[in-house]
Image 1 (cartoon, helix red, strand yellow):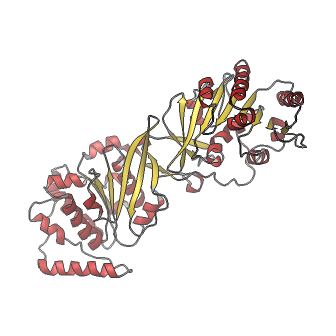
Image 2 (tube, rainbow, N blue to C red):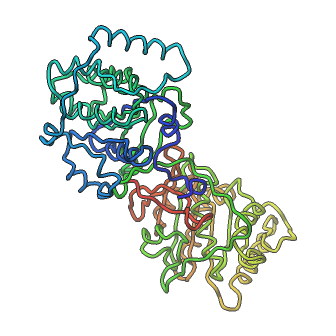
Image 3 (spheres, helix red, strand yellow):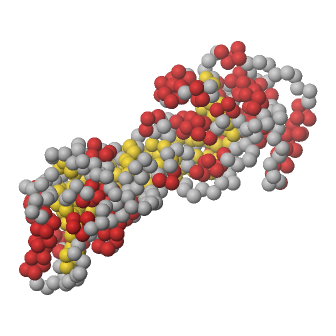
Length: 511
């Protein structure tokens, strides 16, 4: 996947930078059950860690259960990293440590000296060649912990190279050996992270365990909730020591057992002429130019239908045009016309310039007519000058342009309307009447209507009632999303299509 062309990513850049620094780092991952902590931990291990120097310690489910939930773990590179703490085999795998030559007091003094040097120096200490077991030895006086001892061995075997370890979960180990969570985390933090330069990811179920948060270098929280009765997931970067947080919250999805987060949307760079290749229409439906949206709408927009796209107030023009643009391009490139009343703030020239990047020369002027109610005349063939006081003249201009668009073959037309402009020009009551008349004509034709609805309009409820399809675009954590009200659908994140390139987009379900 080319990150330059897609706002869909796996691990956010802040977390990559956090673990990319010299020395060990610890990250606490919090969240209630089912929020995506385990999926994230496994994805991070796969993408950021050396396969031979990383381990996943599972205390909640067996490794076979993990393989069933995440089939991609069966790949050789990932399978070797799974340490199933529930298996008694670990007791047989464990090899007792050779006796230490240093007494406990000396080891503690050396460890304290290392902590002091770390706190006053910006330069990393020399890589260790032996794992610090100072805190672990204290805990082992109460209980043997075979899986933790084995983990220490694995980290030591990799020295002076860095290891990455995931412990899923802190409560699993703490409860098993009657430890306090902060006591266990302190042990691992001091011995492995600070003393042995290992990277540690702790998975924690207790979202209110504030004491543990002060012990680690980073904290992220996973949450899930609903928006309009639809699932929403996100991750919040609450603390990443020595790492600048550019975006504190990310929309995420767990589709196909994979963790995916979303960066802010930006149309990728268009390199040279790029002609839109349309998705074909059917006998009954016009394609939206977006494969996923065609599937959601059971084939696209039905001939004779009126279709509404509501745009939330937190959505930018670039974000909502990422959906509108493919619809219009797919229509134009299949020899169909567009009859447009643009939303307030949109201009005919910029509208033309935007679409002409992706269609053959002269096709726009032959296929598009844009109504302008503020000018009495124009030299541009694609603009209808309707700013005349004589209503009959305006009607004649309107009909003449519509006939020119249809041509002798009577080709279908998209009636593309910005409802805010219609309400501003006509007022609420007149606009509704005019809209009802227009919709009635569309319903007995092969044309389709597409209306863009902005916040705060008086027409909203009436428009919803008359629509055949009703989609809503909203922004979540700076990522544009779309979902259907008619028909009712889940939420989809809008991303650039990294394979086809701009202006193609894909819709990724938030699951």
